[in-house]
Image (cartoon, rainbow, N blue to C red; front, side, top):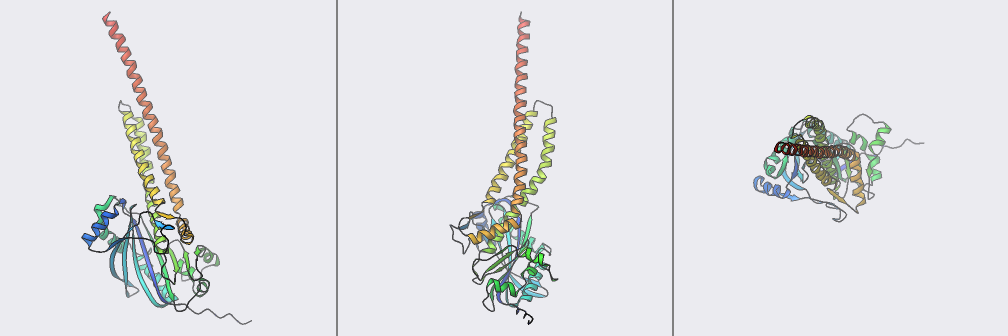
Length: 377
């Protein structure tokens, strides 16, 4: 039996490396106001984003985010200056997604992977966030009047996507898997991976046509799209935006619960005529918090309307599951349920205290009436 001939390396005619960094910046964003501010003060283009390939009735943003043009910048990658196109998307539920796109051309697969890893070291998860915070402050300084209750300590997420548009020869997804080491790219590892690790990294693989492929991992993705018309990057960005916002509310409620317990204890220990009012005021504050968080979480849950596009819906659902968005959302719901129960108990307690005060007042009035009647006789 003759030894198998190794597959020739893949040569990439054109592709793109996409680095994303997402921040929670506000309770909500007035997108129309932000567009006006960006046009007047920054003097750059802005537009409402839409999905390109999906039919509007099949898959669409419920509230199209606002895309801002940030121009281009030079990034030093292993001593080589490369041009990166910068942009940002503002979502109405308070998240901004910053993106840096680096075009690649005439590289073999090893060079593509090396540049992908190098970009991660420069502006990805392994790098300082200074590059991104500078861009964030640039945006925030312009659109601040459009932000409702801006946040100070921003929750953030990062993601890297490697995209191959045109290989040197037409390849099917199956042929591509044989020619390149996708698991190593997604893991960012130079040492050989175990078979178990390779299977796990390839677990979320999606194809619609014979010659396209999407593979999702926790902080990286690989996209092979010869037609160059995929909405996959937008879908991945949306899933990350939802993760950021649910994480923000999860952390907000984590901090709020101990304070709530302390305030409840203080209100219950208060022995005064105004105790019931304080309990009622605390109940009102908790009700307001629950209403606000519930409204925002419902808006986040329904940010993307999926009806008929099964392929992109599978990728979107896979990304949400991979990023553990349903788990974080469920944690937020559990904490909201605790606050709702506390609100109900406080409301009942306040009502009970008011009833007790009313009963005491009635008894006092009766006693005073009896005393006055006795004095008159």
